[in-house]
Length: 291
Ligand SMILES: Nc1ncnc2c1ncn2[C@@H]1O[C@H](COP(=O)(O)OP(=O)(O)OP(=O)(O)O)[C@@H](O)[C@H]1O
Ligand SMILES: N[C@@H](CCO)C(=O)O
Image 1 (tube, rainbow, N blue to C red):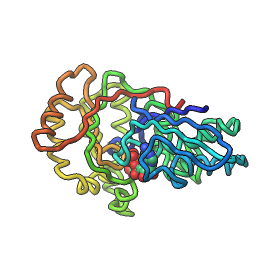
Image 2: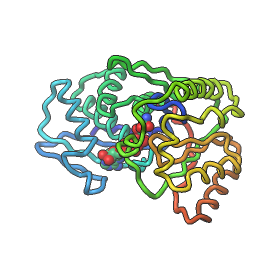
Image 3: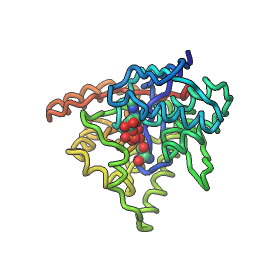
Image 4: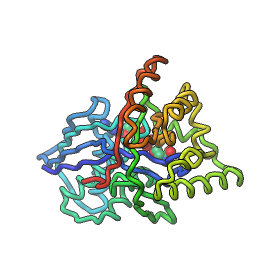
C-alpha cells in the first residue's frame, strides 16, 4: 500500500495572482494499491467515486506519461481539505494522484517532473508548488517551464481561515475576471506583491494590510461572496494584520500574530451574530510539503 499526504494551500495572497501560494497544516491522505482489475474508490462522496475522480485521472495521466500499464487501482481517500473553498483541494488530489502513480510504477520521477505533470493538469502552479515543497513558494510559468523559489517567512504569524458553508469552483471564479488590465492596475499589483514579499520575509507586519490589496482578482470575486467587505473590515477591527481571499475563494484568510489568543473566538462570535454558519480554522504553515 502506498500512502501520500498532501497539505492544503492558500494561493494568490492578494496581489500575487497565479504566482504566490503557501502550504498549511490541513491534509488529504490518499492510499493506493494495485488490484487485479477495475477501479475501487473509498472515502469520498459517491458523486466523485468513479472514473472522473481527479486523483484517478491524475494517476492515469502520469501512467500514460511514464508508459506504465495497470490492471486495476484501489484508492482510499481521507480528506480534511474542504472542496472548492479556495484551500487547494484540487491541487491536493492532483498531487496525490501523480505521486501515487509515480510510487506504484516505481518511476522515480523527480520533484520537478512531478511539479510539471501536476501543473499541466491544474493549469497554474501556485497551489501545486507549495503543496509539493511546503512553505511559501513563488512560481511562474514561461514557455511551459516552471520557475519557483521557496521563501522563508517570519514565524510569528498564523493563518485563520474563515471557510464559508458554500462552494465556489475555481472555474466559476475565474470566469468573472477580465481578460485584460490597464497599466495602472498592473503597476498597482507589481508594487504590492513586491512589498508583501519583503514584509513577510523581514516581519514588517505593519505593511501587510496595504500590500495584500490587489486590482486583478479580488475586486471581481468579492461580488460572489455576500458581505465580504463587512467581514474583511471586521477582521481588521479585531486585530488581524492582513486579510485576503484565499485562492479563488470563497474562504477569507486572516493573518494574525501567533500570540493573539482572542482573534479566532471573536471572529467566530461575529460570524455567528450575522448568522453565518462558517467554519473558522486556525492554521500554521506546513514546511514539508507532500510526503
Ligand atoms: N475530497 C475530494 N473528493 C473528490 N474530488 C475532490 C475532492 N477534493 C477536491 N476534489 C476535486 O477538485 C475539484 C475542486 O477544485 P476547485 O479548483 O474548484 O477548488 P479548490 O482547488 O478547492 O480551490 P482553489 O483552487 O481556489 O484553492 C472538485 O470539483 C473535485 O473534482
Ligand atoms: N490562482 C488561482 C488559485 C485557485 O486555483 C486562482 O485564483 O484562480
